[in-house]
Amino acid sequence: MTDATKQLTQALQELTSRSQHVATKPQLAAPQVITADRLQFSKEVEIYLEQKHAYSEKTRHVSVGSY
Image 1 (tube, rainbow, N blue to C red):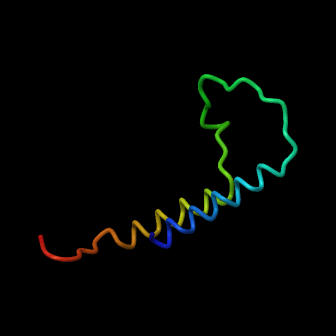
Image 2: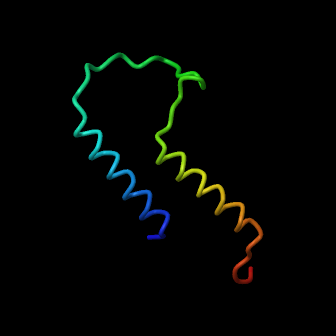
């Protein structure tokens, strides 16, 4: 496993454990379409996506081995 995969797994486990400790709310029917202005990500997900994008940009021109 790569470090990113381990970090993602750990973050998802933490988020899952937090959500299980929150008092349960009545389930509402999910809307057919979620518009962009209603879409929200947790801070952890935003940080992960920013780090993934930064890593991708840094390694864009890296070539390993011969083809």
